[in-house]
Image (cartoon, rainbow, N blue to C red; front, side, top):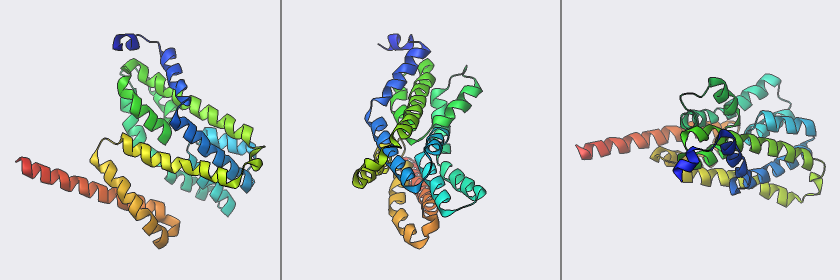
Amino acid sequence: MKRVDSEKSSLQWFLRGAAGIISIPAFILMGAFVGFCSFSYETGVPMVQVAFMTGMMWALPGQLILIGAMIAGASLPAAAIAVGLSSMRLMPMVTVLIPEIRSKSTPTWKLLFLSHFIAVTTWVYTMQNVRDIPENGRLPFFAGFGITMTCANVVLVAVLYGVIDRLPEMVAGALFFLTPIYFITSIWASARTPEVYFAMVAGLILGPIFHHLTPGYSILVAGIAGGIVAFALERTIRKFRGADES
């Protein structure tokens, strides 16, 4: 079976990745984009802009921050900084995923291009499947899933924008809320080291606290504090394990 898989062409692996559009993670993300489409419609953002930011930004939290900045009347530099800071969370995903999908012969321009499609859903889905894919098929597999997901959501928001006002508010809100639930459960399931669990638990505890203490910077402060706590716990546990082994 592994021999047969290793002989598949890049196109076959691309199509296998594209087939991931028929999966629970893909359905949940598309459901969240339905909620995002409803939010964009209510705030008066034109359909062309909504579709464009879906394809170009490809990160739902960043899109929400951008629309929030537009509603608040923030300047272009301020909005750009806010979106850039929110997207910094994707950097660790890039540094983890790229070594998994690249090969010695992979050109740099392909990695730079495909890094645009790295988001939580594509990262988790690829990391869950990449170990069962031969080296030559990993990059096309990710490309198939990432590009297909992006294009599907661009088409989705463009098609639904004109009829989204007929969707009950409760349904739209529930669809949008699926995204954080999926992110939390999927990242927890795909975690491979203890510090990931520590960071998630610390973030879940500290998030509501800092929301009341520093409303405008709650996510940033909770993320930094949670990361420091997770790092300290992981180092402490490793130190005690080393002492016990010695």
